[in-house]
Length: 336
Ligand code: F6P
Picture (cartoon, rainbow, N blue to C red):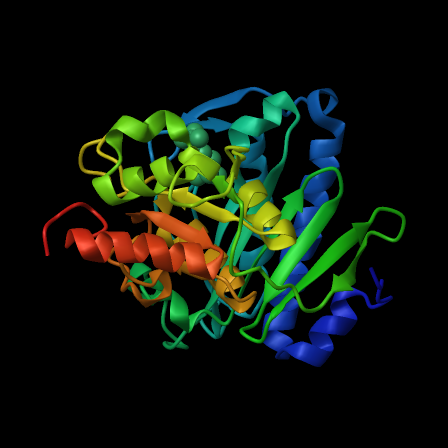
């Protein structure tokens, strides 16, 4: 692989506006502070639970809280940010009225992985702010994903990486621990249209809708079934890691609608996970739906809205969509 010796700040100057560049640098600096804490691990006293629960009713980890505070403080001090919304906080945080940008983030995706020393990450999305001079409200954030100006994630794995899009392809950076700079390693990430690998929490099988159950059954039959080839399954239980694997070597990721928790449309969050990851996946040549419609076309109804997610290899995503169409059902199982 060709290594470009270009640092993130230089890349940003050439590829986006000064406002977005500054916001991405704020996110990048915070990610390095989070990486430092992750590296110290148990010794930094950040393992275990903080005791509270987030809006989704999940127990917060200590590092969830610390990462959230780090990002929130840094972004609200950036004059370009009109407001910030975090997966961990009930309400949005208005920042600078003259700012032109809104930022949503999931400070530590896959946080149940922290205590077992496995991959976690920070996901972010940048949206335009249209009401300069006024205090931003939650309604300002409720824009379909297609309006995102930028999105990306920092993955804290065996090395730390950043995947970033402004709507003109996806670039990947790797953190150089010596210089503490993100260095460009690939400026044209592409996902293969087909795959032999899929990611799903198969323990939810009995709660899936018929089209999804049929799809997974076809894959599981491998070369003895209609697919005529064997498939491999991987599930890290951190969306960030599963999506990163798909960017690097292809695949399809699913957290579909299931009937396990009544009243919830899916597990993943539209504004913090589904939209930013969909932007990245589409920009790498993949596709992303809730099973029926393009995720980035969905008009959000709430900042913490959940959504079924099917993304990755275009051909597979389109096939899953066709199974839903044939069954004549919506992504939540309702009849059309
Ligand atoms: O958003 C939460 C999350 O941790 C995702 O990152 C991940 O894909 C999913 O939940 C894992 O869910 P499960 O615990 O059902 O495997």
